[in-house]
Image 1 (cartoon, helix red, strand yellow):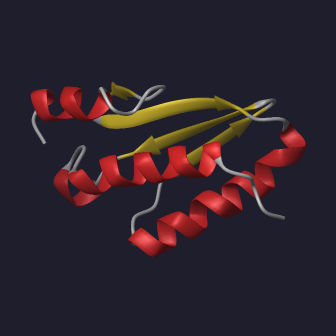
Image 2: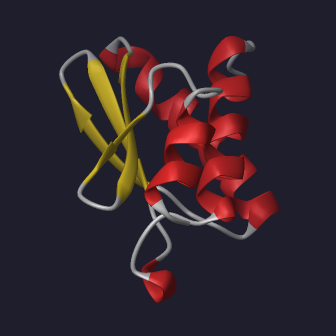
Length: 94
């Protein structure tokens, strides 16, 4: 995707930004809820066969999406970002 395509996609992905050829979102998540959220996100990632990089810190999770083989952001990353947003807005299952 070129920069204009990425900017257009980001317009519909509040909270996400483009950094170092990746889509990135930092989400405040209590430490005791991070396992459940990561499981939910990884279930979506498995469905799409596309996996995010997830970093955890105290009270926050960071999601980074990019397609290694393309060397940057692709439509798969945009789709996964939207699905992560859906997961974040719904209940997290134990």
